[in-house]
Length: 328
Ligand SMILES: [Zn+2]
Image 1: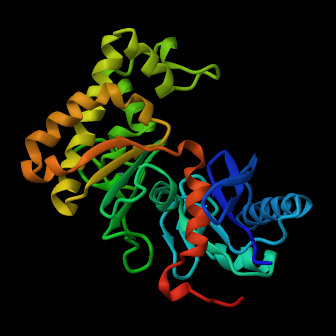
Image 2 (image 1 turned 120 degrees about the horizontal axis):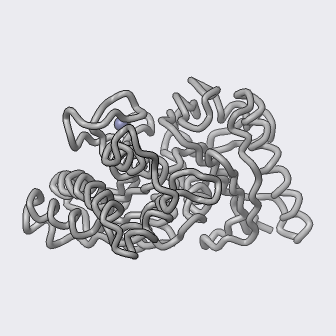
């Protein structure tokens, strides 16, 4: 009997989501576990393999048999062809780490690795907001800003799978420092860490972030700032407008370069989009060619937090050409 499912795993900074995804893209089983990102490089990889084995055991118990393929989505620039993580923002120990070889040694079978933002884009393309579209720009706004590009119905990987780092488009040459080492990247404004920095700058070094902008643990929270914006808090509205302005500058360039039919915006910060939209649209109108902007809709992502596992499963069954049929 042919296998009825594919394993898709999404490795986040805090949690791993691991799912059995049907060949039609439905999540059949979903496990969550701590990602233990602070452990040593081999331990983090061993933990991923253990989560996959645990899901396989559950699937076996439900009579699902063995998975057809395994796809693993991880953060950071990644050489998709060699399966090597160049640098991962949440896993400091992964620098030039041969993740795919490690996972294959643990599991004894082929694994496809993919960048997490690319996997998320593939999920939205397969089962979400970009379904049925051929030219799409996808931006995921979270702790950072990730991206995916679909051109002519195909994901753009570039030479080694590191393309579409859309969060690192420069929108302000002498702007705020970015985690990538550059300055003025759109990520430095339109991510949660960027918004926090905007807020701190606005408050000045002497004033602490007001409690209304913090979560229960006392950390800055875009969700809390969104609640403040809903209550017409001026500081929150201005911060979102600044973030929206820079997001709009990046989107205008993406429209001019790719002439997409759709721009999909997802991630944990996308809930604040209503408060960024006016400033974002003003920049798009000012900077993108009118005919190009008219052909593109800017929409919210549809899959929410399962986008990554669905996309990792899609990547597992649609690996880059050079990886097809690879034996371990
Ligand atoms: Zn950057």
